[in-house]
Amino acid sequence: MQPDQRRAAILDAAVEEVAERGFARTTSRHVAARAGVTHGLLHHYFPDHQSLLAAAFEKMALEEIDEVNEILASDLDPLAQLREITEPYGPGGGAEAYRFWFEAWAEAGHSVTMRATSERLSDAWYELVLGVIERGNAAGVFRCEHPGETAWMVIALSDAYALHAQTGGGVPATEMVRVTWRLTERELGIAPGTLARS
Image 1 (cartoon, rainbow, N blue to C red):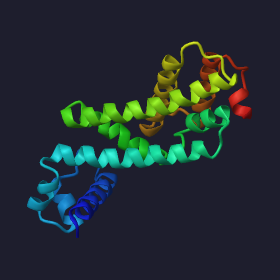
Image 2: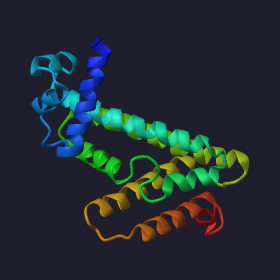
Image 3: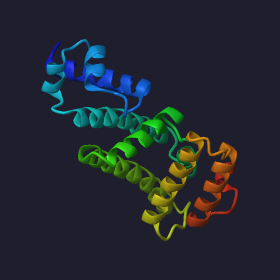
Image 4: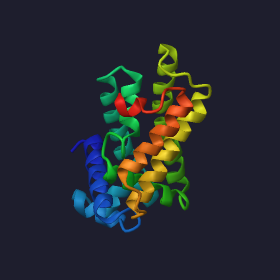
């Protein structure tokens, strides 16, 4: 394999290992065995275990963000775009993708590398949601006075409800999205029930 192909194969193996074992139980040796490389060769591409885990998280998250952008590009209506983002788990990988995010955030508390990666990817999600709100404002669909604050609110609500769903908090998905939509509609200055009908 060419070096870029070898690195990609190692990253694919890392994502598969994390999907099966979680970040905390995935080791570099697990990944090397799955990728069919020596432990030493793996560390030629990823100097330490945390850089390997962070790269695996980034690969998964960027693929999800790309998928969301494709979905949003297929419908230019800001209401429809916002509805896609705020439905339970949003577009993309759903519950599995959220599990990656939650585990990465837990690792970020102990890893400078994972924290920097998490911050960068969270900013990318923020820019995606902010862009939808700003386009809605520009088109006269929304009347949002604080787009930046509202974008973070939408993200925080979605993440919090998804965390409860992942950990058995007993919050039904229908209730989760109903409350998120109601508060989002209030922030955007649109009539109650608009997102449900869009």
